[in-house]
Image 1 (cartoon, rainbow, N blue to C red):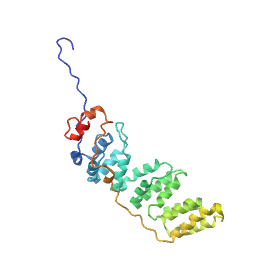
Image 2: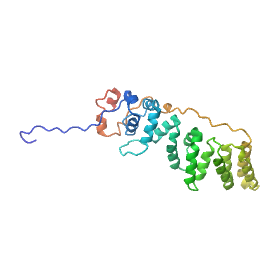
Image 3: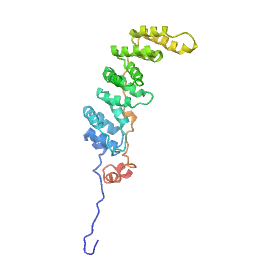
Image 4: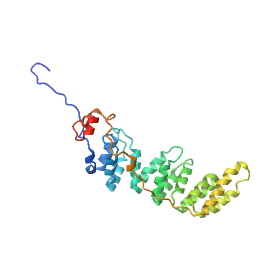
Length: 263
């Protein structure tokens, strides 16, 4: 400073006061989701219980949360969004599930197949629409997924019959999973087209096993509790080692002793 000037202080930047666990139940669900992806709240049972307790609000918040990808996020919350949808078991999850299906690698993850199957008949229309817009390489996977839903639909049956004709092995797997005896003639016809001999032994075997399976009652898909809370710790702290310095500073004066110490 020049002689006679008053001292000048540069204020230390700080973020808004953090949201503490005892505030989770009264904090809007969308705010909790956005704070979580910035690492400002811990991914623990307290957070998820607060979200689960407000089903419709949280489902609305998930719709909004998934609209955009924010640049200031520290975490990819895909797994946590999936967990919430699995716990809620709501058809509103289907656009999200379908987006994951489009992004899959070589195979469909078992947990995603189970998520579609848990929604049963509600999954049929979105998957049929996806099949219609998909390329030839992706369609067999979607037919396979449709076969696992435990829903009998003439359109699914037609797709499986077409698969049996084009690929006996893949078609037999789908028919066995679908479990409708109405597919038995198509499988029997395919078996007549497979020549005898060691080169065709595996193909004949799967077709024969499929015919046998179609003659027996098929158990319905059993929806079991997902158990989201069991997958997360009772308590977890924010991501102090990765968040911005000004966000860390905001915790220095918070009421949570453990948070202050970690900050």
